[in-house]
Length: 455
Picture 1: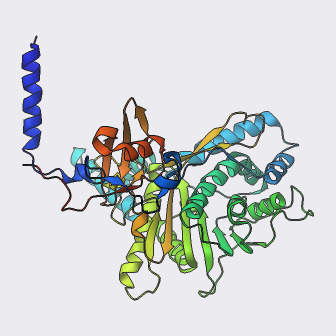
Picture 2: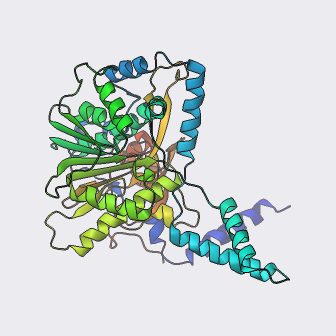
């Protein structure tokens, strides 16, 4: 057994060895003890308590509009409860566990690798036909079989019961961030691609109902559009619409001159069969965006990877068109436009967020739920430095006299910061302690000249 002196000496040596590794600038990406300080340009510390600092974006439990809740309950009133509950659970599990379709190039690469493997392991020569059958059999066993969902009236109702409230909560949280950070923005037009049950229109009306005049809902399924219209009319086909100015279409507007203040695609890009189709759709959506493009998907690795594809595509378009008067930039959640550090890590993680909500009070929905989602908000114009604050990417761990925050920093790196009042100052510590997963931490990152250097 080692004595206390030996243990102390060992710890001292470890610290001395770590100091020889050179400057650890990445560890000080956002929070540097004794240097970082709260960004108080808005003088919020003099007027508001720390619990209301401008980086707070969390929402309490979201509730659906009562008219929407009543309409959804009315449409499912005559369905058998137990069968509906099982169908809802099965569809929810399937949608959450869904992967992206395998691209043709990837499938061909796998086939070539399998063929080489079979040729190396087989002692006796086999015919080309048998080798082909063996490769196809192996591909069928190891490849995810993606299928397009065709929504008829029956499946549309089940989708409504499974996803209406969760989708509303995720999109409402995205709109809330825009409204909180840009309160002067008052959109008049909105387009929702893959509108489904119309939850985006309801969330937009709840956020900007005073200014919005036109909602264009686009979905390839006639059954989904019919269901969304029924929900809008209180569950019937002849009622008065609860939201005026909503239009339903099966195709995107053809004219390139038609633009909308807000364009949304919520849980729709994952329904497209290939990367080529997704690229074409994202480009079309961005062309039709005059202010904000909001993309939301499941908070899984597949959903996050899909959103990063769209983000990279829009940023590449900006590089190709340097003369564009309104180039695109990342409004949220990233505080930078560099490659996502979550994807480039040795163990890739999904950058996801959570929003609590009260579900539609069906018999199987008695307790509040959490919607886990990934999102990207792209905007036209130029980013403001005040908005380049670190984003909290995981639940904040509050411990006695210190707080653990996992941050995505403006320099494109992740940081696990342990914030204390003694090392970082009382204001920064209190702001960190009242912050939550998904919030922005209003901290000024030190300049390279201010960063401490190792001797």
